[in-house]
Amino acid sequence: MAAQFGRRMAKGAATAAVAALAVAALSASQAPGVTVDGHGRQTASDATPSPDATAEAGSATGDSPYYTDLPPLNSPNPSPSPSASGTPVVQGSGEAGIPATVLDAYKKAETAMREAKPGCNLPWQLLAAIGKVESGQARGGRVSADGTTLSPILGPQLDGNGFALIKDTDGGKYDGNSSYDQAVGPMQFIPSTWAWAGRDGNGDGKKDPNNVYDAALAAAHYLCRGDWDLSDQTDLNSAILSYNHSQDYLNTVLSWLEYYRKGTHSIPDGTGTVPAHRSDTGGGKNSKPSTPKPPTTKPSKPSKPGTSPTPGGNGGGSPSPSTPPSPSPTPTDTVDHLADAGTAQLTAMAGDEFTKKISTKAVTKAGKAVAKVRVRFTIVGDTDATFAGGESVATVATNSSGVAVAPALRAGEKTGDFTVRATVVGRTVAGLDYKATVTERAADTLTRTGDTALTCTPGGEFADQVAVKATYKGAVADKVAVTATLIKSKDDATENDKGPYFKDADGKTVRTLTGLATDADGKLQLPKMYADDTTGTFVLRITTAGGATLDVQLTVAAADTSASPSPSPSASASS
Image 1 (cartoon, rainbow, N blue to C red):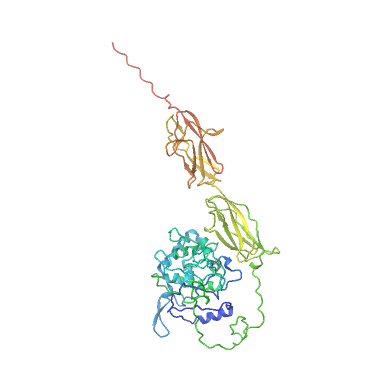
Image 2 (cartoon, rainbow, N blue to C red):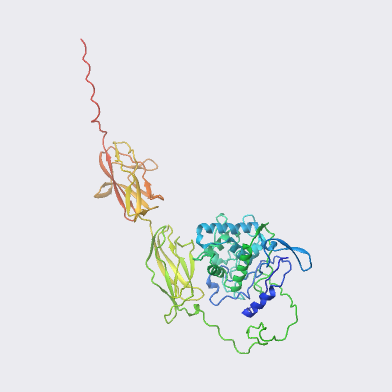
């Protein structure tokens, strides 16, 4: 059997002393074989979030319960060793095995993030560690061929009864609960987080939190949504804590991460080991409470100083009758409002990165800057603009000056205004809105790519097509809108009603072309042109968004016959 190290702890008793004693006791324990328990998880007495890490902190799970079982101490590589009864067993191999479809989902998500955000350095083993803690690898890999769980995996309803209070945000679409939210699927996303973090990982056109490919890719993006480099331990810790705000959760995930890094292997779907212990003993909707093990010894008398696991941790046999002191306010508790920290005008062309970043300052009522406060930046409005990495939400901690700088914004193809809203995570204070504007792609220069004279005979067609290149501040101007019009003269931009013309799809005469755009190299070739019977010199004016203009001269003239040889004189008739 695989050694198990999870343990239930009564809510509110998770002091440092209890935690230390629990770890010491659990390291020598070994749980019996485990079974799937209804809807999987529950929990979290020893996962009490920090004061500013509430459901509003934007954690992926809403700080829902999780499995507390720790990996075996031995190597994950299978190796026979005797059990307590002397019978040889293979320890570690069961825990190290990851169901094939689930493992494939983790590895595909890692590959996707290498392309989308290589600087994040996300290892698939981190997804495996979180998947183990959140759902026991989708309940041991009980998934269909496309990665969808065979039955729902739901956390308890977050109704404030021993858990965070998160009222329904999805109308029961994902969790079937129209009163309160519940964590959903193998990576346990709450619906409000899935609404912006969800991804289509298996290419079926849907974003389903119950599908391990979708959920794994969403978790990967979630963990990489900031400027974190997960090869750095500090950033790694921050990313994991953003998934569930609990030090015990962090330690458990890091233990499994290290275990999986030492080696793992694929096992058939549905044959994985499901954890036995959870971080909470209370019940919740769609979850089944665990039955605590009976104590192995009789209740002892008050312990000697230094050995008591009482909440006071002062070594006495009984709790002090005095009222415990109120906890010191966290930095978040002291924030009165957010103030702009010198953000410049936010404007960018479609497809470009904004050159300026949003800077927001957390301030007390007395006007003092507050460090170590998490500020959430959310893109609001009808826009496809994103932060670096493709996310619409970013959370950044204020620095020693109280300033949080949002990641760089990247404009999409939709033009117009949108808003970036800054809010304090874990505290209800007025948000601060920043206006950003996306303008259409533009060019400031147009040039012909050839210099051949453009001539045509009356009623004929031009041998050469007009080709141009657009640039903006010397750089290629791609996807820029272009209009081409045959005008009366350089001084009269009215559309000409005679002379050269284009043809539409039906072969009809057209003298203005719209809906044109430069290619990825900033180039554009116009369709063929034709001439009616009018001779003379004409002007084709080409314009772009941004004001670039190019006039091209066209000539329609009869064929030159001056160089043709004269006919030879007729021979005289002989008489």
